Length: 177
Image (cartoon, rainbow, N blue to C red):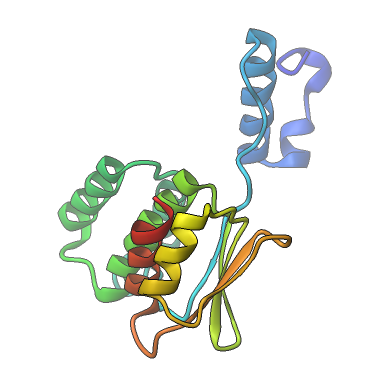
């Protein structure tokens, strides 16, 4: 009885977005659809990826755009959001282009089953990863010094000196797709 009179006041307690998510999950469950949430994706690379306040001056509109970017699942979605940004605010600065590149990397990782791309000391850690031997050989050939830890389901790859975002995207495309 999520929408009935007995529930009045709960929307104020949990917030509108959470309320909509709960209602959506309840409806999907009632229909017999899969309601397991997507795994949490962590991409922590040294990159300036954000929507600057001098590009989108309204905080409300910036938050809306962040939400749209978080919901990106395809290259087509990225193209549509880029076109919307150009149309509404002009050509995006580098930080915004990098934010869209992070969304692209998220899509690649999601397709490969990777949930973490995190800087760890002099390496970048990718996990969970379960690479067959042929992919391990490719990784060792393309990225010397890489370490595969099968038991921990992770890979450590020496991080580059510059442009970690482009490098990580290429790594995932070359080894994990």
